[in-house]
Length: 345
Image: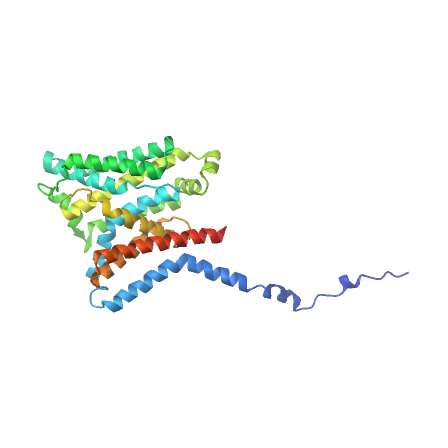
């Protein structure tokens, strides 16, 4: 007796059915792609719009070559310290002492030259070594003794400021500074201030470390899950220590740059770097790799703040207004980072 085949299996699927299934859900991917692009490039878009607005409002001054060079020069010391700060932020640590490190390094370099007649190259090396030692103190306190990085770096930053005040007796130092030292901050090559080249070199080194080396990958892993990283064999303590040493070196270098540019040192001259550096790093965390601290984003954050400050200055804005805008930018960047992390969970 012939068997009857199952009608459901025998009936072929309509030709348009295969195309109908994916066509029923195109809106979700498109929306996700739009949100992803907005998350990655929203800060860059705002930066370009803001740049264009300043060009329209001050067409004869803002887009000029001299003004753009001045933006890069004014942002150089901030770029150095923000690049170093990105390293510890990648590992989800904090550092509040780099401003004090900058002031201490400036004091050491200028005191050695002005009061002890030390060659300016040796003075710079001693200042950088002091920054490394200061960063090591932070690293030991946080990585090996388990102190919260916020509290430890705040406390040690106060100590560094105390040492600086002891060295300088809270006086400005501007006499007997070597011409080579001043040329380091005020000289130019190919029409660009030397500090721009120093900042570019530091940025490149930090970018290579974080994005192209094994240690950088481990640092990212520590930031994602420090306990899992430790269990997988990563030397978490050593890398955290390295991160704080890098911040110390960058803070000291920024202090040397500031004092060389000003041809003097003043009490706690690195303090104005504190808020802009945090703002640059947090603004950068909302760009390119949303929710992640990354050095390319940090560079964009530095330029963002430099353009804001320069543009508002050309518009005759008061320092209070500039500080308010920078603070608002920092708050917005933090909120964007938090919201993006929540969206991804």
